[in-house]
Length: 315
Image 1: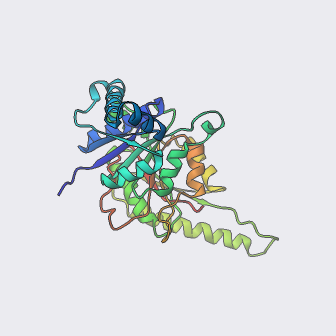
Image 2: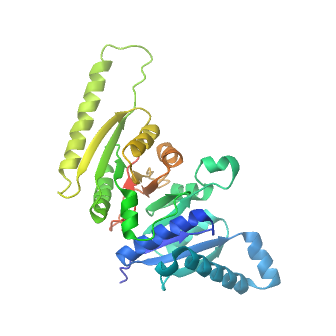
Image 3: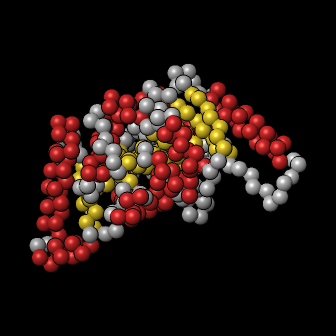
């Protein structure tokens, strides 16, 4: 039975995907896993190649271009056993298909838009993958050149932020973040955002409700941090405001390099990206490890010593 940790990195030959490739390669080097690179060609190019030179020519040309891209990006760090996958179709469905067929355990991809106004947001392909993935996905900033080795990755992460909503999913997400914190030897910060209560009119019991909410949150955070073994240096924080804005602010103020967030779960639709995760990706400009809900197949912690999984803060 194969136990090799498998990482998938979709690329489009952009500078953004160079950064994602460096993160994927560094992770695989550290854990001794296997890296698969994926390029998804436009269906029109696929059809044109079929008419002119045959499909095998397109696959061969794309593979050579991928090999050249790897050599230019990684240099002496380039692995000799990278697998190259060439597909044709819409990028997100093909990424999800390959992830399923190859039994991928981590997807590493860049967050970048195409041009103009979309540069303010992460790319539509990344968005679609996060909405449907059942695999942990490390999203890299479009401006992040990526680490050349594991030590540089660790220095870049500095500290891990885990926004928690204190639901049943929180212990699993904290456990993943703890594993990564131990592997990187970096501090761990658990943050809970208390959203403001907006009553239609003033109510005399409101101050009591706010006090009770904070007390319960503090008690649960104390319990979570006390369960973390020595050597992780856990810290907890409670802030007030809109979740995504506060998470981005904490990430900036505390020099966070990695945010670990969870994806919402639905019995019918499976993991879905909520508005908080979306906004954090738009605002934080940091590594984000997005974790789908725990499933029976999720028996192994992601070996992303460069990323963190986060629980959704409501939204």
